Image (cartoon, rainbow, N blue to C red; front, side):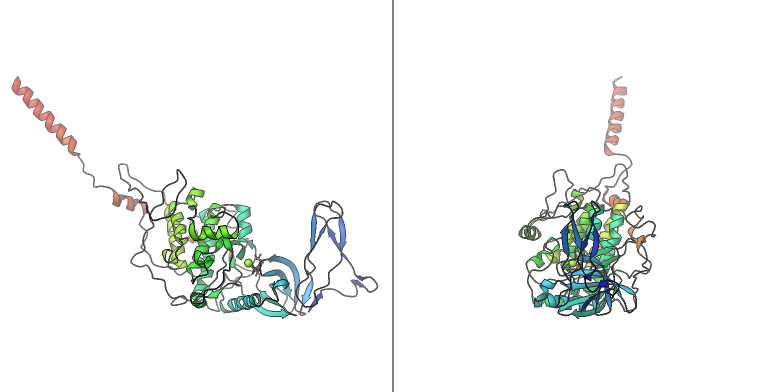
Length: 480
Ligand SMILES: Nc1ncnc2c1ncn2[C@@H]1O[C@H](COP(=O)(O)OP(=O)(O)O)[C@@H](O)[C@H]1O
Ligand SMILES: [Mg+2]
C-alpha cells in the first residue's frame, strides 16, 4: 500500500492533520496551499489535482499528489516522467539499494479491464525476455492492491516526439545514428520472433548524449500469434501499417513501415500523412501514396527518399525483407548522396526511369521518382523471424549512467556539427546491426561512366568536310 514519505511526527500536527503543501503560480508568483490528497484505498495513484491560481486566476497549477509516496516500503516516487494510453510513469528511488528506477502504473480506470491487465503482463514478459542496450529492462513486476506496476531502468532524456518538436527536420547525419539504434532494438525483438507494433516518436527516448531507448512493449506480440490469429485494431493510428489497420496477419515488416514513417518525419520535420480523424488516417495508410520526403524537404536526397518509400509500400512483400536490409539500403543511399557527383564534360547521363505502377504523384516541379533497384544476388528472402540471427546475450553492455556518447557531452549529437559519416558515430561497443549483403555500391562517377556512349577522337562529319575540301580544290586546279 502507499504511504507518504517523510509523513513523520515532525510534519504532522495531530490536531490539524497533514500540513498543506505550498505551490507557486509560475505566472504571477502567488503561493497558495494544496491539501495533500489521500492515496486511493484500492492501491495505485491518486489523480492529479488541477486548480486555477487564486492570484491571477489564469494559470492552472497542477499538483501531483503521488510525489513522495513510498510503495511497498521499497520505492519512493520522486517525479512524474510521463503518461501514455496505458499508464503513468514516475522516476522513483529503490530505497533498498538507493538506485533510480522508472515505475509504470496501469491507469486506475483500466485496472478492471482484463485486456489491459494482460497487456501489462505481456509488456513485463517482453522486457524480461530481451536484454539489449536500446531496450528498457525490467527490474520487477508487482501489484499495489489491484494495480499492477512495472519497475524498470530509467531511459534518460526526452521522447523523440519532443525532440522533433524542438528541432524540426534533422539533417541525415544526425538522424541516421538515432535510426540505427532504433533498428538495433527492433532487430533484437525480431530475432526473438516479436513484433513491437507501437513504434512512434513518443515511445523512443533520446538522451542528451544521443543514446536511444525503445519503450512500451504493451502491444508487442509474437509473430506466430499475429500470423495465425489476427486481432483487433490496436496501435497508434499515425504509425500503423496497412495490415495493422486491417487487423490482418502481420510480421516484422509492419515495424519497418512504422520506422520508415518515423525516419521520414525526422528528416522532413512533419508527419508524411496529414492529421485528421482516425478513419481518415487509416484511409491514407490503406490507399494514399505518401508525399515523397525529398519533395517536402529538398535536402533529403532522392535515393534516401526512395528507400523510405519502399519501406512504406502498402503490401508488405514489396518492402525490404528485413529491417536490417531497410537500414543498410538507407545508409547506402545516404553515403552515395554524400559523394559529390563527378560528371565528365560530354558524358551522357541516363534519364530516370519512371515506374508507371508506382502510385506516387509528386508535386508539380518535383523530380520524378525513379524505379527502386530490385534486390539481386546476395539479397535474402524473408527469413523466419528469430532464425539464424545473433541473439543479444545477457552479458551485453547495458549502459545506464555511463552511456557511451555519440559525441562528447559538451557537444551532443544534435547541437554539434554533423559528423562526417553516420557510420563513424557508432559507439565502439554498439551491438552490430546485422547487415544483409546487397550489391556493393558502385561509385557515382563509375556509374555515370558506364552509361556514357563510346567517344571517338575524330567525329565522322569532320572527315566528310575534309574529303569535300580536297575534291573541291582538285576540281579548281583542273579547271585552271
Ligand atoms: N523507462 C522509462 N524511463 C523514462 N521515461 C519513461 C520510461 N518509460 C516510460 N517513460 C515516459 O513515460 C511515457 C509513457 O510511457 P509508455 O511506456 O509509452 O506508456 P503507455 O504504454 O501508456 O503509452 C513515455 O513517453 C516516456 O516519456
Ligand atoms: Mg507509449
